[in-house]
Amino acid sequence: MNHITAAIDCLLGEVLSLRKGESLLILASDYPPTGLAQQVERRAHELGHQAESALLPERLGFYVEPPEEAARKMRSANVILDLARSSTYYSRATKEALRRGARVFCLSGLESGEFERLMLSVNSAEVRALAQRLLALMRRSTRIEILSDRSFALWASLGRPWSRELLQLPVFRRYLNSFFDEPSGLCMRPGTLSSLAGQVSFSGLRATINGRLRIDGAVFPSEQDCPLAEPFSIDVRRGRVVKVEDSPAGNRLRKWLADNARRGAREVMHFSFGLNPAAKLGNSILENERVFGALTLGIGYGARGAHKDLVAVAPSVWVDQKPLFSRGELVHPEIPYQRSVLTRRPGS
Image (tube, rainbow, N blue to C red; front, top):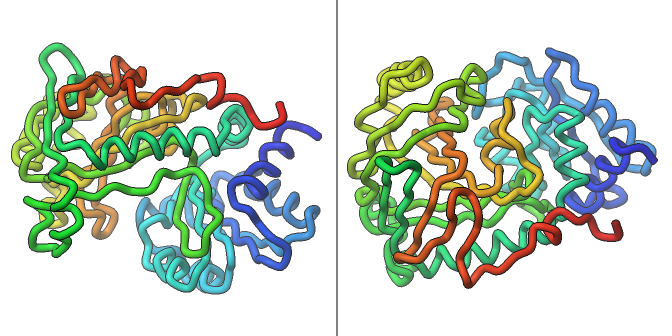
């Protein structure tokens, strides 16, 4: 068995838990032609599964609705695998599929070589278990501080555990409520939306997010700044981006903020930690967000695609005045781990 076949088998079996009788829909880009989608479809047929593909135009954009033909196929599929460059992650079509119990897994924009490495060099179950331990720590923490350089510090309150349970109304969320997403990596239960293993996402209380953050990894969308050629800083006050340093990428971000002001472009929506030991900084935001120890700051409500992910590669992070990450390494005493366990495939 060659490497690409082994990687696809890992995806279909361990990650998606594709069962006999279930239908698999693969979303793919029609330009440039993607061999990965074709290989996944062919291998699924060889294993006795129902599988078909749907094309998304290359320039459709990110976080937008799929064409009607693809949306129609999404309404009947049991499992949806998004390999397209134009992701449907936040689309109404995806939300409808989840409501009826479909499982949706996003690997948008990954090429065959990246896919092989990320499937075969990572123990998804162990990475997810580590992410669960980190998530549990964040849930019981009340404050986060991020140092991305000697002069770049960002801090926020995470709220109190009791307030997260009692104060759920939207009117309170800016000041009193925060969220914690389940870690990515596996897609086995009905109604699950997940993605590549190795990410933990959460929000601070937006009105308490203040400081300056150095962005040195990527800004996405735009493939022009993924990865970044030149770092720049942003200033945040009360959960809003108020200043962007002059640089080619910074100037593009500043224009986007002005153009999308009515869609909450300046609002900080989430933080994410990367925990994937095989992820490398490159031209895929999916992989960049999961570089071990990277911090992603998400801004913009997402309405009509108005959302950006800003990646800082290896900041130092404290929670409740205890070190969590030190220059990209996880150092908290309550979260022991071994890189060899995260990277060793079961049975290898």
